[in-house]
Image 1 (cartoon, one colour):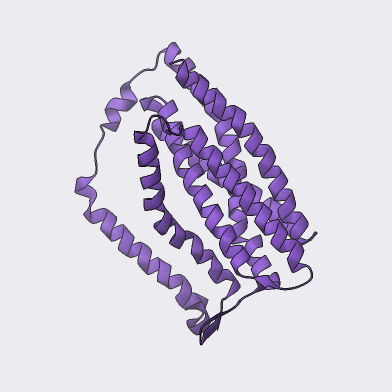
Image 2 (tube, rainbow, N blue to C red):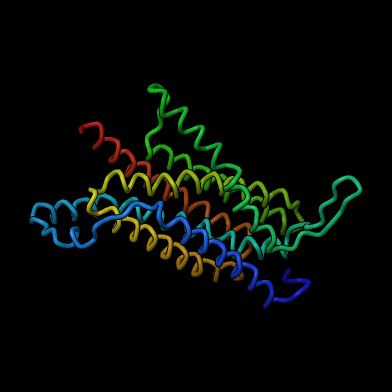
Length: 267
């Protein structure tokens, strides 16, 4: 749409789709659960409850900090990965007698497509493991799998960066990275919010959601700061540094996750 009609029409398309989504949301309003907000506001918290809230926030702070770094790496797919695709990837795709050139920024569309494809698969996997006591995975372990996938993803991008210094690399390198990062997103983003909800008392769940969204904002901000370094070094070194950073984060999360599991084991 952008190439044929310009940015004005291209920005209008998602605007119309959001209008459709808002209409659907409004029409389904009668099916949403309601809550007496005035009653909730009238409850006076005791000193013990306030102290418990502080303990919960402190306990979850380590989780939130680790997820900030995840989002800072994840959001590279919207900035440095696009620049890498433009400058270092062979974007010409040939399938039998059909050939076309993929626009560098069009590769970003892989993530939402893969989310739709992988969500039922991961839901099935988690439901199977949750039913099996022997192979059940706790939320911290699911997230740890996600962080390991991020390490693999960024290592893949680093190798592609070093190869791309001498010759154009196949688009499949970045496609593979998107697959790994999307699987990591399903392990960290969704499961992380679930873990935070499980740890927080009922009266704090709305606040935890707000903090979680703020964590995403901090990750976006950090990603923008990291992206400024990309043009000052080579892609191989840049993505390699991202790999080392996320390895350190994963090690830290391993111990944070063990603390959550130990607490649950002790009731």
